[in-house]
Length: 84
Length: 424
Image (tube, rainbow over all chains, first blue to last red; front, side):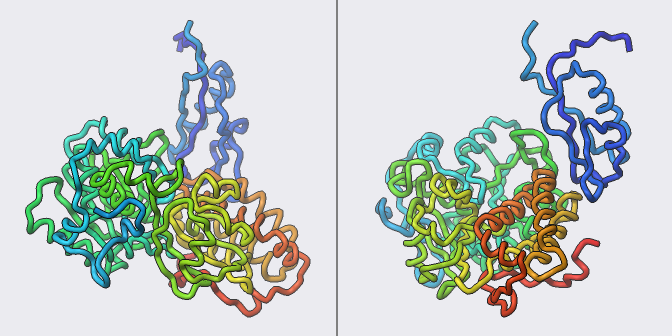
């Protein structure tokens, strides 16, 4: 909302498998990150995505908000960040 | 003092009944007080519960944690059905376990020791209970010892499930995304250690790291308990020094000396082909064959048994033991068991079932909250490589004696109320 954030570092979408009930909303909202298996449970991409990739980050946020069980979270990591 | 090169160490006890506290003090008379933290680091002791995590690093992590009411949890749940090491340990000397726990409690500054024994092992419960009362009578200083008896389930022995039981009386594994994860009872951190690890800690504190390292290999020092079962004269628990050739362990346990395969590590472990029985029993040598010491289970598969069928029985049981919290485990493990069934018992298309099994293994792996599904997948994958010829025969439909006249060599607890428990 008008705030300029520095987009360095990367993020991973994480799912809590205990909370997850396989609604499949995350696959609809973030198809580039989430695949579903034959029982409808999400297979989330494990490799970190750079935060500068704003389209993927936005759909990851949609998935986090859209999850009926609130099982998803975005985990940021700054290990790839170089000090500026 | 027990001399350095003599086994048994942790199983050192009186014949027939466990040592009393006075006997324990006599047998394990220590020489001089040591700097236990230093000795623990030098000893290179790894956890004996299966993951082989260095105990020193775990203690070091817990010791810097804040908390006024820290506790030490002794895991004597014996989750593996083929393992009997806690039974043997408590039957030989329960005071060694409690003493190790007290030393760990002193190191991390814990006020309580929670000993967890499955209530389905009444013998172990009695031995531990008696030892605790004996300690109380002597009114020894140190942390307060409590005995907890969760119900026995395969996943109830997992550390987060154990802590969940202590918190909320629910033996279900928890999701722990952070690394390294610190388990908490209430708000205070806990140190969870296997009973055998505690016994080894007590020995190190009494006799020192050099004494401890005089057995075992450079990378995995000390001795370990092996629960030998399957095609043996009699199921036993042996204490062996790490790095002993497996052949020597089999000979000591009067086992079948030309086995088809060995199940190492537990039901979530791996098969080791019978031709590798000269491998030293230590993680660094076993890892060449994809196996590990794990929880110390060694089940011998006889020549006439069918390895694929035994794997199927184990997988079916493990699928039933799932806590059914995570979808990939609750649905995936029964699916793996179904695929294995259609491979072993002549079905319409066993080759498709084989391919499906492989793809399902890949898709389920690493997606549970605990490591239960990963263990099953490790077992299935090792079965696919070790029994590759048998599987090829099964797929083309050649009859197999093992499935027609089943000779069950791996003891598996019977499924109670199977139809109720299997997930729809």
